[in-house]
Length: 208
Figure (cartoon, rainbow, N blue to C red):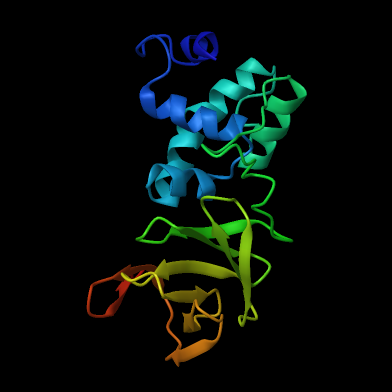
């Protein structure tokens, strides 16, 4: 991969940067940008931009593909696997976590609970799934949105979860039993969710 980088950017520093190495590790393990962002505690959009500017271009050279042939992370993963580079990741407990992170469609959002016990994933399939970070097991599936789940966020006590769908529906869930606690007013043009110790905050980005 370092040789591919040198060929693509001959004036750049030799070898992969620490960030590029972490992103490459994620791709080799078969993780999506959303999953990589969770494990590295980064914004999903930032990971996607970094990948498109660097690793995707190196992978094209490494696998003898045309420039800009990688259209999404699945292409990169498939080509790495065909070339014999992809491996199966394991957590510190020896559980193959990737095998459990399964939705019927792609994962669009993810968040780790403040207590470090759980991972929540929102998907294009309109569901939210809660996973144990220690065992890798699926703890519960939340059905309640009719469109893709774009945002998920835990409360500070890790007992409730806020979700927002593509349709703009925002809902608050009890993680003890998976029951809907409250449906907030539908919102639009909201791109992120943040949590303070006392309240939920919807952070807005208004596009001109």
